[in-house]
Length: 314
Length: 107
Picture: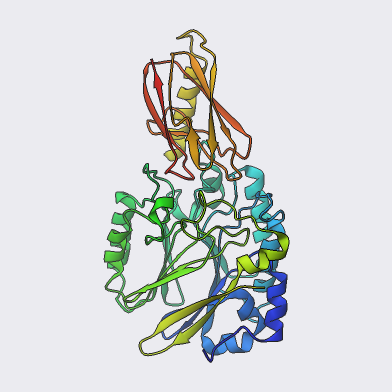
């Protein structure tokens, strides 16, 4: 654990500011492989961050603008702190990727406020996918009227940046009783075609809101037809799969595919299966830091694998 | 395309709600609480209005599998109502938590 980023005084200050929410994840690229770093940690020690690779994009997730209950009465402030960390980076990230649940209730005022907050982000481009909270208006139109252009209102699209192929997928529009997310035949066919034209050495980043692997099926924390997607991805040498939805970090490595779920900037959720359902986790204010936690990511080589260790803020 | 479909659904829904069909048979309440619809299954007479109320801290929606009705996200204590005019069995779920299932049987 020589790359332990936890112990610098600057990092401790940054983490102290984030006691009410996770910040985001910075992905640095080195040798075609992405390494995820806690944004607060990366911001606290940019020199070390630079040594780990090229900071390419930041993942934000589950900002839930509009949420105002006990688990975090000020989600605007915690998102603003995450944005401040991005903006303080010595080299602005090329991209910011938001993995959904921008808003809490899909209301126009929530989307407007979110866009207003996002407009402060100093980054090359912002890319989004919707979460089920963003598509919960009766007409499913508020998200698409603001963010639908990139995908011609389909929700899924791809783009290239710095030799990396990014694929944005939507798994919150088709509902199967029982609860898993669904990509659907049309989208899977599109992905298959999109990937056909890429060489196996192209680093691939796939992002969607709900997990693209089964984290906990009883709560719908997975995507029923994701195995078909993973079959298309198997021939690639470097695949990074990102999602949000579960408001906590869970990670898995399967061959050349690394799966990461992100924390929320808004509020934590219980661990899989703990309690009656995946709602906001309420804890006494003096215990909040201990429940939210942070994660450190260290890099091991040959075979290259990411090791991620949870540590609380307390 | 999607927007058109849902607009059409909303239009149909308003037709049913305003329908001159069955007589008014009053209102029955179903709550969304602890990630469950309670009662999960109800049997009502044609002309009954069902009102769903969300008693959780987490938002829920009410979405008819057959496209008959679809609520917006209901925050804590918010309500959604739909008047059932025609006999049949209507299944619904919460789009935010699709393991939450319910049924309305209209006689």
